[in-house]
Length: 313
Image 1 (tube, rainbow, N blue to C red):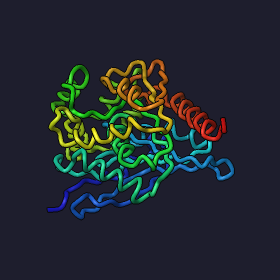
Image 2 (tube, rainbow, N blue to C red):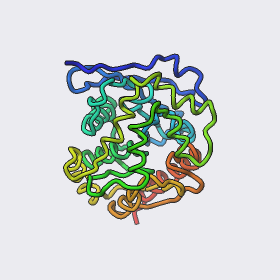
Image 3 (cartoon, one colour):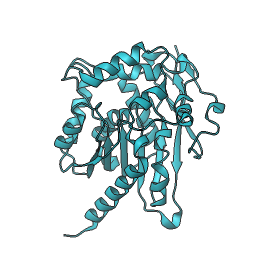
Image 4 (cartoon, helix red, strand yellow):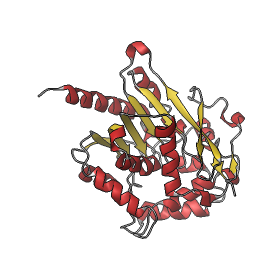
């Protein structure tokens, strides 16, 4: 039986605020032969100003590449190519209608197809937020030779060794019981500033009705909560690699992000040489509160690590 999926009508994305980027699409195998269309942004600098760096921007739940609309332009202006895919189930990408078609492993496999098998990216600077980290850090652990440096924010990679508590336990309830589930409300509650109506419209655009929301509904339930979770063993294996990494690693912490649990300290302490910065007056969706400031920190980190790599001393 093939996967049934939804494709959000293009009209839902017309005229979105501060989103002038051209669409790019590719097809991937859902795992049963079904071809799913995945959307991604591919913004490139003027060749005369190109740095040769590729920045992969991975969003989380329940956002899409729109989250990076204020990060991409300054990075492109600095000479970097920026690629921002919409995860399957989000944004302009196809959305399986049965929530049980979404698993942690299927998301990892789908993302691997996009960035490695189809786009053939290497020497990547990965920027990962929220579930973009749960997936991107797995790829980092399984394909460390593909990455040049990492900037993580509001994320971690759980292994099911701790009981859910605090904001996570609340989010697990909200995500399953909200009727309706409104993506823009989730983003608004995770920011310090209030979202403008046009921004709310953009975050709700991918989801015309409940049948398009099954990926967003299922994502919270895929977080490993016990040692018996299907993702526990592969995540632990990825952690064993992360603890040996020698690539530059930056954790950008938002001072009003209360939803990452111990992820901040875990990454900072586990990855050799990891650095940390703190962004003030920003919440869990730090790219909404401090997009240009975040972009400036990424650019500084790229340039400083480039300089270190070429310094013979």
